[in-house]
Length: 281
Image 1 (cartoon, one colour):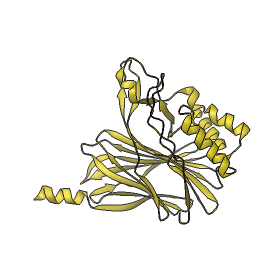
Image 2 (cartoon, one colour):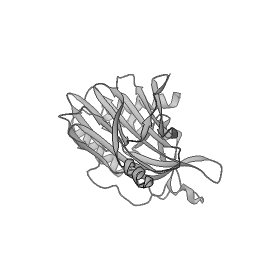
Image 3 (cartoon, one colour):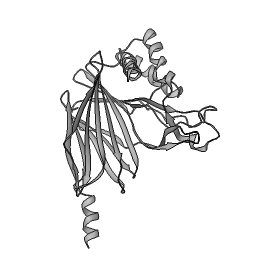
Image 4 (cartoon, helix red, strand yellow):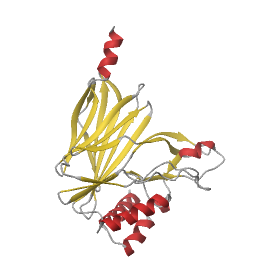
């Protein structure tokens, strides 16, 4: 009977605010029995890091971390990470509200080409979820990536992508990012917040969306505070099938630099500035 009650309470949820920025509220919808500690706050350069422990009846099950990065052009990047260090899986939803009246532009109007690249193999990551424009501001919401750290045969530590979570929604002024996180796995997502439209026109934005969908090694989808995680080349080690890591040239983001010369935009400028921060870290 006790186990039945416990299982039932795990499906009861409670939403708790964890951060606010530029009039937006970030919350976690979590099992009612889960508690969040007060944040440990640290600052390094342009990054402010807030880390909270996730606990169940006093036992730590993991951490929730948000890094707020302010670029030199006043655009902000929010990096959210949940690290399940415990022994049980759990479901969470990371939500962002305050976007009433916003209009969503999908960055995935068509499915990603599933064909394999001869060098990198299959990369199932898709474009960011989409851009939301509201009150003269705009945000770009990345996908949710669930992964675990593994070690390749040569000793290299990489992230093995388990799946890109498709359960993102935008309704009634709120972005809902729900996912299921197995033990010893990490979920990561990101948001770009801009005080002005990211592109000069809808046509310019659509040109980039079309290009990025058809040039999988050009778009940086999986952004983290340490830099973009990208598909690593295949080797004889079968663990490279879904291995992602840092490649210096991709971290520099030459594609954004090239596009910004011919089609200047706040998006490309922000990606360039973010690349500079990553290289300085």
